[in-house]
Image: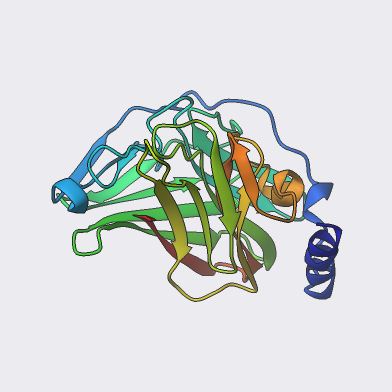
Length: 266
């Protein structure tokens, strides 16, 4: 564990990023925080079923795949996104039922159809605009997500972008969690009385300067500026935990950088 945490610290120093733990989580809840489904999507049946919904803010608060395996609509309904602006150190997050940072403008629905929805949201200080596109992939099946982060200022800024989910797999609140350079996943193994099930969040686009997945030791969403605080440096076992996929990079003045990923069963 120590070697893993040291390696992560060395990486950020070499890339010129401040250590994420230097920023603090902002307390507060925006008035439009919600777990309510506003956009519903479904395809297939049985082992090919994919059913999910998206809130007006761009959270997935229900995700079932295959039939009978619900991963998010349990407990806190925790799923969503976070941004860390490195300088000045500022956190923006919205994790649906697990709360938000309270410093967002209301969302704008840019488009919606039977298979996709596009939602934009700007931070209340005007620095960042996050535009999210959710698409139903019937063939895989999977939920495709494109998270386009725009720097609205006149200077290059360093940002961390995270996607988080409180995964409860195979009917249990205690699961196993882990991550790789391109993915994070939570699961329960098959036993004599239980079919195993899991959910993977996988990067499918170009990697940022830093891209990595983590299993977290808590079901709460991370501080985007200190995402490694709940990662023990190894697999998380038999815990009510969560998954996090993290991106970090410099974003130029007026420029946009996009992270693309999918949720799919495993």
